[in-house]
Image (cartoon, rainbow, N blue to C red; front, side):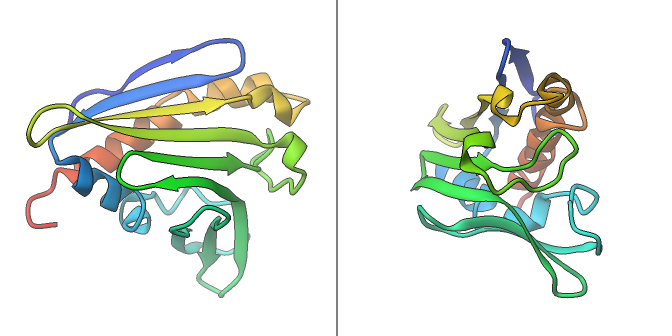
Length: 166
């Protein structure tokens, strides 16, 4: 079991970090290439159950889900892809967790991977500019800062990254 995520919020952002007992390269690979292996199936926006969650490995790529019926639902864009240290995504899901294609309404999700010893990594996640979503954006801050949000998701990621032989 990995360490407990540490979370704090400010007016428009949520910051979560976790210590993972795995190398920075392994953490990067599991978070990005292996995104589908640890992302929970219940965290989807499509009408169909989610089959696959994908982060395309390049700036300008998509971050999206594929349903069991083959349908695709975008979550946002890959703004920066800098292995093995930094990933920056736009988050286009509004307060009702529905896709909003307008970039002016998107928040940013930055994930940094920091070496923390020979075979350990501190993963730092910042979800910023949640106020850009308008309407009930304060609910988004509350939602993504709870156990069902980024702290819980980072815990799932860390548990998967720490599995032997993976």
